[in-house]
Image (cartoon, helix red, strand yellow):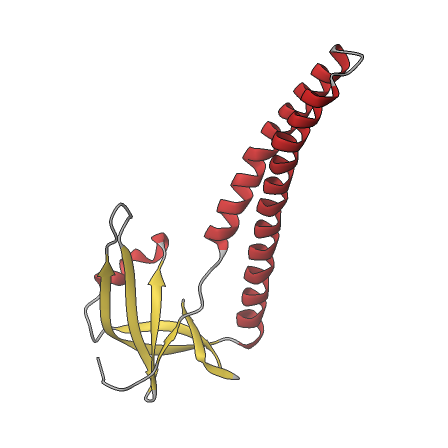
Length: 163
C-alpha cells in the first residue's frame, strides 16, 4: 500500500442494519401486545383491582417493552432514511469509474465471523477502505492490482462505493 496517503471509508449500504432493526421491531411487537393483553385480562379479572400488582406489571414489564419496541422502530426508520438518501445521491450524482485494488485484509475477532476489507485507489492522493458485505465477498478473491468498477460522487471525490 502506498505510504502516507489518507484512507477514507467507502460508503456502506445500510440495508443490513435496517433489516436487523425491522426484524427485532416486528418480532417484539406481538410479544408486547400479548403482555399488554395478558395484563389487561388479569386486571379485569380481579376487580376490584389489586393496584400494587397491576402497577408493578405495568411499570416493570409493559413500559420497558414499549420503549424497546419504539427504539427498534426508530432504528429501522433511521437506517431506511439513510439508505434512501445515499441511494438518491448516487442515483443523481454518482459516476462510475475504474479503481485499482491495492490491498485486502481479513480480520477475525473472537466469537465473531471474519470481516473482509478491500483497499482501492482511483485518485492519486487517497485510498478508500471498503468493508465487504455478504453479497460482495467475491471481490475478496480478486488479485491485488485488479481493476474494480466503483461509483463515486464528483462533488465529494473521497466518497465512493463498490458497484
